[in-house]
Image 1 (cartoon, one colour):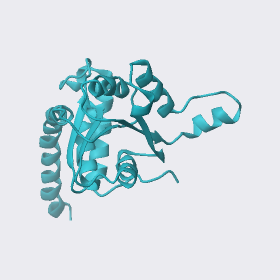
Image 2 (cartoon, rainbow, N blue to C red):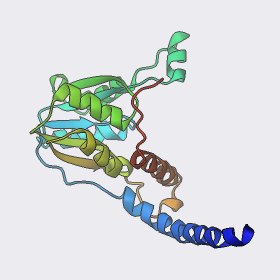
Image 3 (cartoon, rainbow, N blue to C red):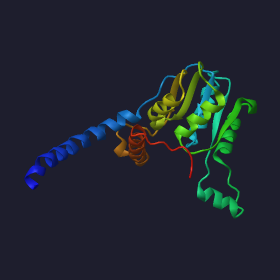
Image 4 (cartoon, one colour):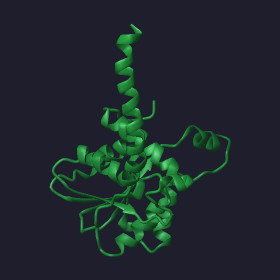
Length: 207
């Protein structure tokens, strides 16, 4: 039995050894992605990082789109418990909105959509349902490390649209992700989430 298993096990071990260096170098390339911005009917800013509304404000001022669309992300258990005991915590979309206002974006140019969206997939679905963007141009703005995966997800949901995904400028970004703690976290997390996505996993709503 062991004699029969040695060959396949050796092959698996060799594959793992070859895959590891490929992943180490390849994930830096995977994270390094951004489309060039172009005029669009919608500028959609994904939740998850406060650098995104900063980048969105600068992009909006170039006249790239008539409005900035912000999603309403879900509130974690800790957030809800904090509210329950009477400690005020602003929701993420409200902080994003205030950043945009502070940076000179008019109130009537900010549009909130969705309700408690849990994931990039849920954001794409909520946007598709509310905006009905078929035949339009959609510009999505997110973090640079998230842009490639976000494009796969939005492209799978938004059919018949001209889609671009822009990664916000990040002064800490490096393809040598192992040299930076934030980048190391992003490399591992984006790898796991990408594998989950291509395997058919979808985070649709919080149970």
